[in-house]
Amino acid sequence: YKGTKLEKIDLWKSPRLLEAEKIEVLFHEYLEAGGFPALYTVSSENRKVLLKTSIDLTFYRDIVNTFEVKRADVLEGLFYLFAKESGNVVNYANLSSSLKTKFETIKTYIDYLNSAFLVSKSQFYSGSKLKTLEKNEKVYVADHAFNMLQTMKTGSKIETLIYNAVRSAGYDLFYWQDKNQTEVDIVAIDKET
Image (cartoon, rainbow, N blue to C red; front, top):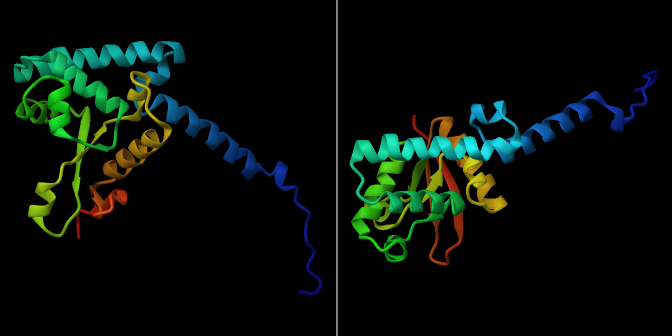
């Protein structure tokens, strides 16, 4: 291209790079604080207190009263376990044993947490309804902000963030695993197809 003048650009001083840095800073804050708008109105030191207060109100005012929960300690234990282990496949037998309660109680309490929008479940992806029902589901906390209450591994936090973002975009979400335990964490199916 004869006669074309090229302008020298210093990429390190580019406005786009500065904007990318701002986005990165905001993303890291979001990764730590989560998606509850109220958490951004208080100092970072008070976020955990505000989140804990909100969870306690939801447990005791909403879930325990609405569903007449007999073992609030088990309900709370389940939630805090999911806050730490978000995105893992639920092993009902292990949970039942470690929380010293019935298998059915565990399943029911997970449904209560799901009904209160504190967790959501992801079923196994299969063309067969029977195979889907035979496999245990994964449970995700509704927001990765709950990592403030129980330390969550970074990989689980990011998986939870992505799961919730894709879910809020309106997709049906599943997970998939082969016989060798190789896993696809999130399978998104457009609800319209």
